[in-house]
Length: 358
Ligand code: UD1
Ligand code: UDP
Image (cartoon, rainbow, N blue to C red):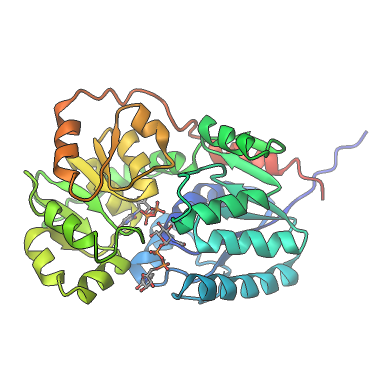
C-alpha cells in the first residue's frame, strides 16, 4: 500500500486579543508544515495595542484577511462577522475552520463554517462558568455544540462536554496559552524594565462587561487605590470608555498607575515581576498560576476552577478585593500542580487535525 500525504487547507478565525494569543503557537506549528493556513482577523479589536502589537512581537505576518468589523452591539458585531466570514470560507473552501476561545469572533467563525458544512475545530473547548449572563458563556456553549473537533485544555472541560452529551472527537490536548508562555520566555526576560513601574506592585486587569458598569466599576477602582502596594492597570478601552463616561478617569489616575494596554511580551514581564494579580480576565488567571503569582479574580464564577482548587486563585465581589488579597498573601501556595498540560499542545492538535478525512 502506498502512503498518500494529504495537505490540509486550514482557515482560522481570530479577532480579539485572547484569540491572537491562543492561536499563535498553532499558527507557528502549521507554518512549519506544508499545510495551507489562511488567517482571518475579524477586526473585533483594532487599536494598535489591542491587535497589531501582538502580530509584530510574535513575528507573524498580518492576517490574510482583515474584515474590519470593529465594535458594536452583540447582534450587529456577530452578524457582520458571520456575513463576512461566510464569504471568505466560500472563496477559500477550507477543509477545516479553527476557532479559538469564546469571543464573538469565535462563535461567528463556528456558525459560518458549520452552516456551510465545513468542519469546525474549537480550540479551548468545554469551558463553562455556568453563568449565562456572560456573553462568553453563550459563545462557548454554542461553539462547542457546532464543533466537529473539540480541543480541551483540561479534564474539567472534557467532563463539562460529557455532561452536555458531547463525547465524540473530544481531545484533551492541554492549553496553547501554557505553551506560548514558555515559547516566549527568553524574549520576555530580555525586555528592559519600564521606568514608570515601581519595584513592588500589584498588576491588575479589569475589562469584563459585567464589571464595567456603574454599580461596580467605581467601587473596584476605589478598592484598587487602597491596597498596601501600588496597582498597575493596563487599561482596556472598554474600561477606559466607562471611566470617562462616569467622569472618574482622572480620579482613578490619581490612585492607580494607569497605563495603555501593552503587548503580550510586556504584559508577561509585568506579570512575572509583580507581587500579586487582581483580574477579571480568563487568560490572566491561568498566567498568574503558572508564573506562581497569588491571584484575586473579581468575578462570581470562573471557568478555570483548577486554579481555585489548587489554592492559587480566589474569587471576590467588588468590595471584597482587599480582604481576599490579604487571604491570598497570608498563606503558603505551592503552585506545584501541573494544571494545564503540555508544552507541545499545538503539535498534538495538528496531529489530530491531520487525521481528518478530506
Ligand atoms: C472581548 C471579548 C471578551 C474578552 C475581551 C478581551 C466578546 C463578547 N468579548 O471583550 O471575552 O475578554 O475581548 O480583551 O467577544 N474597543 C476599542 N478598541 C479596540 C477594541 C475595543 O476602543 O481595539 C472598545 C470599543 O468601545 C468597544 C469596547 O471596547 O465597544 C468593547 O470591545 P469588544 O470587542 O466588543 O469587547 P471586549 O470588551 O473587548
Ligand atoms: N494581555 C496583554 N496586554 C494587556 C492585557 C492583557 O497582552 O494589556 C494579555 C494577557 O496575557 C491575557 C491575554 O492578553 O492572557 C488575553 O486577554 P484578555 O484578558 O483581554 O482576555 P480574556 O482572557 O479575559 O478573554
